[in-house]
Image (cartoon, rainbow, N blue to C red; front, side):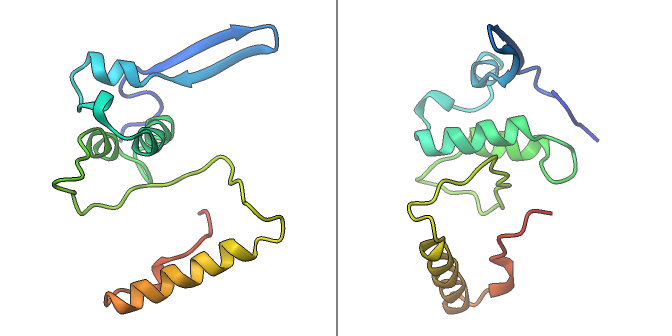
Length: 123
């Protein structure tokens, strides 16, 4: 079971405020994993999150390579692990987020899926 830093992409940044850990997509590029430079920025954000959260259980090395090889022309029907560190809402009440979740559940039902899979809880 891989965990931690299986791609060797972890880096350290020393600054006046302390030492910080970051994960370099450039390491994946250097290792020939995917065509990352051509990915949309939104996919790069998801990729960096996967790279940061590889634990061998919820997020695997295959999740990183799947996203690194993402293509709009031939999408791979796999689940993308999403572990946000924070969520910024456009409204302090959270109502738009609840409406979005309801719309996602409705779309899931229309497509014949299980609406219970649209679940905002973090395990």
